[in-house]
Length: 294
Ligand SMILES: Nc1ncnc2c1ncn2[C@@H]1O[C@H](COP(=O)(O)OP(=O)(O)OP(=O)(O)O)[C@@H](O)[C@H]1O
Ligand SMILES: NC(=O)c1ccc[n+]([C@@H]2O[C@H](COP(=O)(O)O)[C@@H](O)[C@H]2O)c1
Image (cartoon, rainbow, N blue to C red; front, side, top):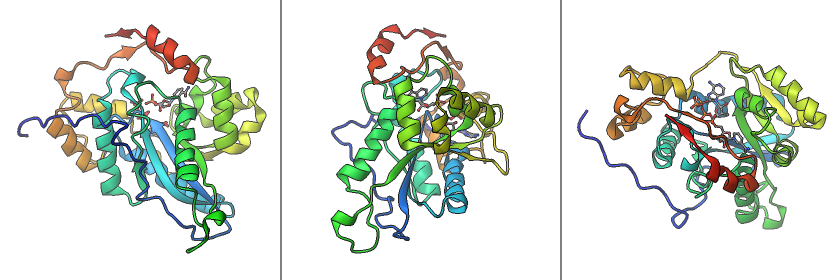
C-alpha cells in the first residue's frame, strides 16, 4: 500500500441529480406494473450480500410475481452521517464505495446519495417518498411501450428491499412510528430477504399483531444458499488486518486500502445509545438527545 488518498468531499444538494442512468425507461411487457426496489442501510462497507439482495429480489419477482411486476430499477440509499451509528465510515466514503460496487458489478443497481447528503436524519418512509416522487412525478413514470405518449406512462411501484433483521426491528417499540410503518407497509410494501438470527416468520407474526393487512404487502425471499455476511463482521476482520477478499467487491477493498478505512487506529467499534428517530417529526428531538458511549 502507498500513501492514504484524500477523502472525497461530501456531495451536496447543489450538485445533486437523481440517478436515472440505469432506470429502465420502457417496460418490456406493457401489461406489467414497473417496480423499483430501494434498499436503505449503512453500507459500511457495502458487501456482496447487499448487492445480492437485489438479484434475489429480481429472481423472486420473475418467479412469483411475473404476472404483476417488472423490475425497472434498484436503488441503494446510504444513511447520512447524522444516523450516528458507531463504526461507520463517513457518508462521502460510503456513497463512493456503493457507487464503485454498483458500477463495477451490476448493470441495474444505482446509488441515490440524496438521503446521505441531507443535514438531518431521514426516516425510511421519507426516503421512499423521495424516490417515488423522483421516478413518478419528476421523470413522469415508465413508458409502457417504445414511443408511448407521456399520458400513457405508468407510475412505478416503489418497494423497500431489506433483510429480516430490519423487518424484526419494525415491531420493536420506539424505533419506527406507527404512521411511518403504515405508510411503508401499506403504500410501498417490502421485499424481505431472510437473514440468519432474525426469524422472518416471527417478525411477520409480530407485525400482523399490529396490523394484519400489512402481511399481504410483505414478500419474503428465502435464501437458498445462506449468506450471512455483515458489514460489522467485515469491519472487524479489517481491523484485525485480515483479508476480506471474496466478501466484498475487489474495487471496494482497493478503495478501503487507498483511504485507510476501518483500520485499527480509527478506533474500536463503538456502541451508540442513539436510535433513529421515529419519524420526520422526531428528528429535532433526537439531535438534541444523542449521546455516544466509546
Ligand atoms: N447477510 C444478509 N442477509 C440478509 N439481509 C442483509 C444481509 N446483510 C445486510 N442485509 C440487509 O441489507 C440492508 C442494509 O444493511 P446494513 O447496511 O445495515 O448492513 P449490515 O451488514 O446489517 O450492517 P451492520 O453490520 O453495520 O449492521 C438491511 O436491510 C439488512 O437487513
Ligand atoms: N424510523 C425509521 O424510519 C427507521 C428505524 C430504524 C431503521 N431505519 C433504517 O433502516 C436502516 C438500518 O440500517 P442499519 O442496519 O445499518 O442500522 C437505515 O437505513 C435506517 O435509516 C429506519
